[in-house]
Amino acid sequence: MKGILVLKKNNDYMEKFIDGSEPILIELDKEFNKYCELYKEKFNKNAYVAEPNGMKEQTINAIKICLKKNEDLLDKLLYPNSDDDINNGVLY
Image (tube, rainbow, N blue to C red; front, side, top):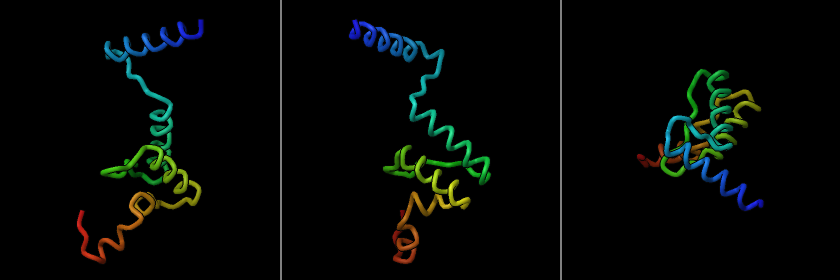
């Protein structure tokens, strides 16, 4: 019976996805949006996912540190080597 419920849940998910009438957010997306909003309220800047290989989890953790320290450290947390790269002439 449990397998049938999972299958129904998956089918409902796919129908919503294909229909496109309702945005589907997974828990990670919801948490990411929540912390991006908190960051914007606190520092009046938009948060972002580091490029090229950043992850939402990484950004969420960085925002949590910024909020805890009450300091905008997002750039330094997401790109910890940026100062060294600039001094060494490394361009992205």
